[in-house]
Amino acid sequence: MGRNFFKKKIGLALGGGGARGVSHIGVLKVLEEENIPIHVIVGTSIGALVGGAYASGTSPERIGEKVENLISSREFQSSALKSVESALAGEDENFFRKIRSFLKSQIFLIQMLLRPSILSADQLKTIIEYFIPDINIEDCPIPFRAVATNLTSGEPVIFSSGPLRTAVLASSAVPGAIEPIPYEGQLLSDGGIVSPVPVETARKEGADLVIAVPVDRSLPIHEEFKTAKDIFYQAAEITCRIVEKHELEQADVIIRPNVKDLHWINFSRALDLIGEGEKAARESIPQIKKKMSLWASLIYNLKQLGGQAHGR
Image (cartoon, rainbow, N blue to C red; front, side, top):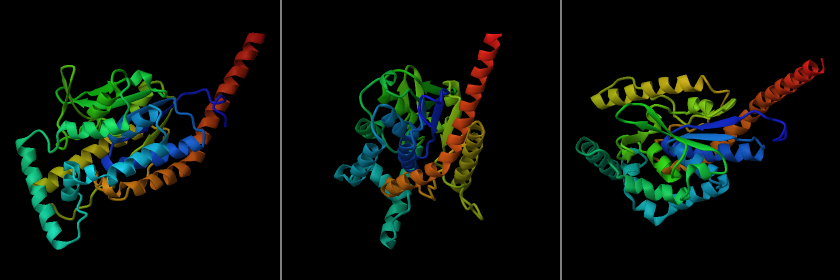
């Protein structure tokens, strides 16, 4: 179906989920290949990073290359982010490495009690500057919005203008991991706190058909909760699921890549998820085109009725 035939506005809502959001790249590749027009992109957290890069003119293939280059770089392998990944993602199998990772995780937990975050915002800024050009949001070829959270008021903050890098930084400041971002008298944190998959914002930006891409993993199943930390984490997961469910109910199409049980910070294993994003998107193409056809038929019929009324 041609781009000019479908006159309604399509919005793409890209959800947060850390490393799991690499699957957004595969979704974008397929939508582009299938000539699905995207009129506005709204992103939360990693969704803002990938969506902002694409909206600014970077191809999905190039974004994927940049992710691969970053993960394999010496700078990343020796970075604090990699240290946190090794400690919290649980990927080490060697017994002594497991012990070392456990001790690191305890150190990080102690840091969370004594400081606003494990990592500084500067460490995230470096990554954002690698993916995001130094332009304003209003200069993006595809209209773009990023969602952050005002920690003081608990309200969502929607970036629709100003520096693109600042918007992505605020939207991606994972609570506890990245320190909150001061901005115009506000203290901003990850948009996923209030809007895990920003469908509602896409609607408010005028999207008639919203394609939502959640990248959360399944709710962890615990037969027993041994510590207060276990209970706290599970409670947070449940709350997030309820908020996400509310937003997804407003979407027209949901593309859900199989992100397995990948930890949000396990970027070293995230490249495989590009293929999962492609697979999920291809499975959803018939549904998207059906929705587009229904809209096109409705527009055509309304025009016909209008013409008949005018003829009278």
